[in-house]
Length: 74
Image (cartoon, rainbow, N blue to C red):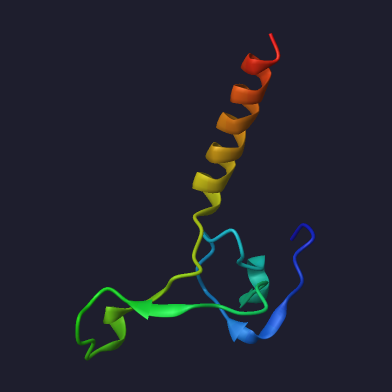
């Protein structure tokens, strides 16, 4: 679970999020932002965790940044 601190006030079952605390089923953020992709949300699927960061995408961005830095040092 790396260095993540479990926030027992925020349950989460999205393991692809970088803030997810593994099998614990909680988020590691102190605060999350909940929003919507609809003009007038009426049902639960219309809402989103806007604090979500895809774990794989974050790793890919970090690797790309390392490559850029490495290439600039030549």
